[in-house]
Length: 591
Image (cartoon, rainbow, N blue to C red; front, side, top):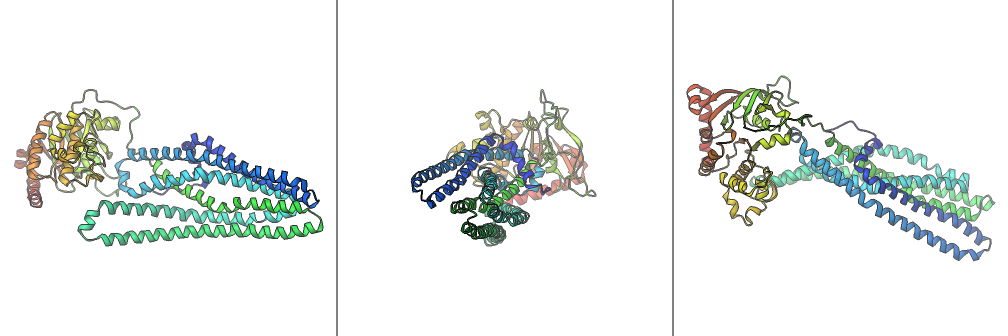
């Protein structure tokens, strides 16, 4: 997950493509902020003439000068208001564009990426980190640039009043610069740690919420709370370290300029007493230094905000820069008249980071499914059945060999096109927090109500009509308001409603009672007459549903034929079927 750290400016520069359309208003916001500061710096110039005039007895200039200073104060306030109006909206557009891009990237990245990344880390990047970037674009960069320019102009003005007084005050910038460089190195590390820990904490919350039934059933709520509290304390400690670092910087940013101003004031009084400068000049000098107080003191939190934005940008681009190893071809092919011929030719698969001496999970599979043929894939646990089915839709990419549909390598099809030809139903049924209708028609491009009704009937999911709002009933977070069998039937209905030429079923009825399974299988026989089906079977009754059976052993297809043929010819097949019988009996007891 880590990548080489770039410099702060170079890292933040990567935001420019996303911020391009907002740069105009942000730039105008910087101009408005500078204008407000310049107006504030001009007030001491009038004070200089006013004080000198008053000292000389010219009281006639008092009221016009007060009116002018009041006008300048109102003008400064208007520039501040204009700056806020300019910069508040563009940052939200940048945040929205980046969030959409990040979400699209997460959808595009292969399953292998999501296997490695904790969901809380991704969530914190999509929410907290992008919010930091928005605030920096709308506030941090604007004031950082404006305040820096104000400091430079202000120091020039101070030197124009008196060289020595300006030199005394400007000498304070040397230790401030040194302290700021040290602060950047220290704070950058702490900020990154805090944001990573925040992501870990989000993961802990998500896992605890999703697994609340397990935690409650085992009475482990207190244990989960203790783990959460421990991680929260670590984050708290890191946040305190961040606050301490910023507090130390603020100490120096306030103390050093105040000391420099006090010293300059003492020297200035001596100069004024000796006649080297006028009283008006001394007052103007002090007033200008006071105007520079805010730009100087603000460097602390603006630097902190900038470094946090840098860390947030790094974390977001860690995802955006992730290479997509399963991509669409440059010149994609299409299946003109899909028939449903699915063929595996010497297919191998191993995880990219697997040790070199470890055997392939799928180790040379050769299997041919004729159009309209249903094949049950069986084998002992860990033989590679589920992995093989995941390769058909390129959830994972084959390491070598080829999978073809109607003679076309699936790697030559776009992923969207491929997944219109193949639909999958998994044993672990995942539903979304939307209505029954939206879940079942997820893969049906036409959103056809007849397809919806047929799919519900095939999956024996008629229970949905009895829900409070029928097909429009929201089923809750991941469908956990439903039973396991109900979720599996809806997932199967979703696969059937997609009307694919090829249907891949990874034991989609494991949580369904035997009577319901029988009815589903009877309905599936009608559907499978025209659909090629690869069915991972964990029950003998599911095996009977298929035309042929493929026996998988140690990552290979060791036998292929009808149920009767394999019973007669394969001792390992008989062993597997016996194991399935025992599993089914145990499930029936549990149900």
